[in-house]
Image (cartoon, rainbow, N blue to C red):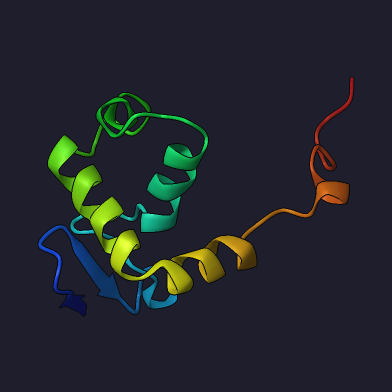
Length: 93
């Protein structure tokens, strides 16, 4: 069951990513938007990479991040693929 946050486009659902904050109506975690933004994507460009998101949802997710930086930074760190495992498991032909 989804639980609304204080941000209109951000909710939590225990059945999706163990309750991590996501964009309402999607399975897209706030951390995914933050990571694109940190890579240098302008907020207006993020819907080109994630076309199911509106610009309003992207800005609201970034606003959520601004209010909850410690939580989202922790989520990013927990979900980071270690450098020594990046590229492993790929089919090498």
